[in-house]
Image (cartoon, rainbow, N blue to C red; front, side, top):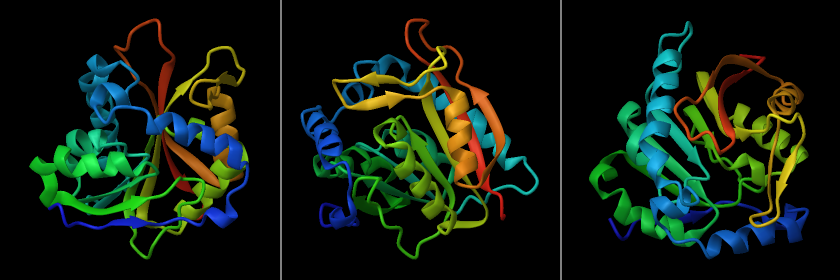
Length: 235
């Protein structure tokens, strides 16, 4: 297992807003590769989060047409929390993409119980990620898109379209603001968007929302979390 290659899969020459992205990367380099580190000190909500996500996946599998259960991609995967507790329960193979190599190194240990279901480990920032020829039934984004500028997020979704299998779905699970405004976090260089802006960005990338849910049972003193399942309009 320790010999599995971590594939560098990006093109930094195309990166814009380098200072912004480097600041975020520097923040995450200093985060401990633990569940508490991945969740900003909120490890206690992990099981509730997974329950909500599992509910969404089960609803998607009942859709007509429904995504398959062959392969998923965990984007901004960290050490693989979502891969381990959610995606490997529903898909035969799960690939991970994560910009911080020390998280991916730790993932080899953390994912050992489900290692037979783990495919490729890609080391890349999502703003630069170049999809390979592998295609996916579900591409999962969670608590990561706040690090991308709007134009880069739209471009990423457009690239996702060519990486989806027939009936494939992109899932976005993110914090959202209730103020209707974009709110910035200077510590990790991320933003939290209102739901309406996320919906606008989906439309810009030519996606249709097929399912939207609110995550329940989270603490009252944190952002609301919304889940969106989206599919390219051309599908």
